[in-house]
Image (cartoon, rainbow, N blue to C red; front, side, top):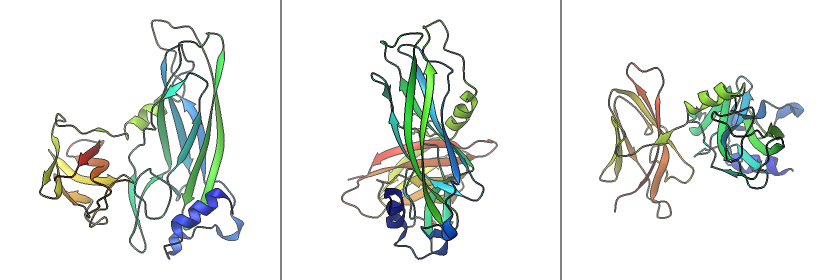
Length: 277
C-alpha cells in the first residue's frame, strides 16, 4: 500500500458510508483532477516578488479538500522546491464550501477548479538573462462516491530580466490568480468596517452589517464546534458559535464567509481569537 493510499484509508476507515469508500472500484486509476504550476508574471527580476499558483481543474462531481477540519479526507499538499536564495510565504488557501455527506459527515471542499496562491521573492543575486526552474510535488485526495489519492510532479521555468520602472508583463494566468484572490480571506481586525467578532461569555458572536448569511469554516487546529452541522451557519446578520472544551486548543481559528445584501461577492475573513479566561 502506497503512502497516499495508506493516508486515505486511515482518514476514511472510521466511517461506514458508501460515499466515502476509500478505494476505487473496478480498478479506476484515472486522475480526476489535473494540476498545473503557474505564475502571474512572464518573467522575474532580481529582488522582485511574484505569485505562484497551484491550479486544479477538478472533474465534474468530484472534490478535493481544504486545509481545515474535515471528517473524511486530507487536504491538498504542496512541497515546493525553490532555487537557492528564493523565499516564499505560506500558501494562501481560497475559502472552501461545506459538504455534508450521509452519516452527518462534514467536509470543507473545492469543486470544479481552485488555485492555491504562494507569494515568492527572488534574491538580488540572480543574473538577468538566466532562467530559474521551480518544482512542486503535489498530492491530493479526489472523492466522489469513492476516493482516490492522486499526485503529480510539476515544473515551471521563468526567465530573469533586468529591473525596470514597471513590473514584468503579466502572464496569461494572471487573471486566474487574481480571481483566486477573490476567495482568499483577509484578517478580521477591530478596524474592519461593518464586521465584528466578540465573546459573549463562552459564545463567539459574529455580526455583519447587512449580512444575509454567515458561515464559519474551522481550521484543523480549532476547537470542535458543539454543533458543527447546524451551528456553523446562520441566516441574517449574526452567527453565534459554541465550542467544546479543549485544554490543548485555546484559540479559535478559521474563516468567516458573509453573504451581504446587494453585493454579488461574499466577504471573507480569517480569524484567530484566544478564548476568554
